[in-house]
Length: 369
Image 1 (cartoon, rainbow, N blue to C red):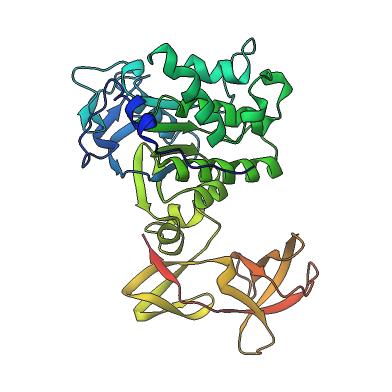
Image 2 (cartoon, rainbow, N blue to C red; image 1 turned 180 degrees about the vertical axis):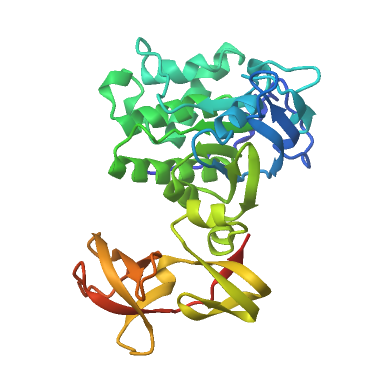
């Protein structure tokens, strides 16, 4: 698929009118949440608990977390499908909560995991459906411009059942983008695709959003997807933002043990810290930041390596996950300890279950709370 940028011709700009609920102020942010709170019944813990975050123009922001953490409810609150109990939702600089603005007047596009295409309408008909607010003469050019953006112009006369899953998802994306929303919300949009198609479709959708300059909020529980798709991610737990940052920041500098374990696997070791060193079951481990006293440190599996050094820590190999180019081993520390660790190995040397080996730490560990 060749992704084409949206034309910037004078006629195209002239045909673009502000959606209800949008502001034309150039310095307004697409989304601002302040103290957002939602309970589904009195007396129950909040599903979303005083959540505050801001999305910048053109940003791809991902809400990531386990089932029940509040990420989908947050998306529904933004869309206007749920009413908050407290806090505010501002889209394009305009307050949407008081008075409550209904979904159809928020200038927000929605893409769901089941595509929600109309089976009796063609590809073109599905995209045209969302353009009823435009004058009739502008609808067809706008629909075809958007189909060109997602690389589906040649399929405009086909019915949804005649398309692959990835193509159907791009039709759903085109339908959401055609009205020029202030914000695009994507709720697990790739979860119904097989692994290979999910990867390619995710790349295509990301490129389309980049070319269109659309601000998008993605909800997913898939860690790999969040890391690959996002400019920033919000890792949620219990309705709160556990950590917000770029994928690299959150992965390499987890603030808590939950973050370290959820976003990629991590080895958590108790120890005693003295400035930039900690004494642990792996011996003396360097730290990326100073700490003192009892400490819990995060060591990523890729920061452990097998070695022939007789001074390194002895382990027993318990299991191996082989993935072709690399493998992840589960090992148990020697000396009667029950602690198990993960070691990511790229050398290609196969180690058998039950084998005795030695490991060492190759990168400084990070203290976590």
